[in-house]
Length: 116
Image (cartoon, rainbow, N blue to C red; front, side, top):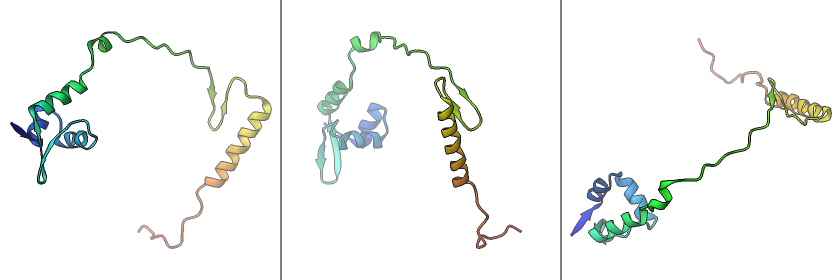
């Protein structure tokens, strides 16, 4: 028996567009008759089997621990890490001043409409 895309999407509890994406990516096989796509019971079962995760992978996952983050201080316009030397701080300040001058907002264009 053949099932339409809409019927299979309802059966899998997904949107028809998701089923279409799976078909386009080759994750699910199909039967094409003229311009319509149909699916057999075996194709649906094969798709479900390919998406099933083994119980051994779902039972327990290793706990990943991350090392503690380095302490840092953040001022209004600069970052000074724990190893920032005075030369690095001066360079960072110069970069911030240059960025501020480069990206500061200029005068309004004379062609802009004035609000009344």
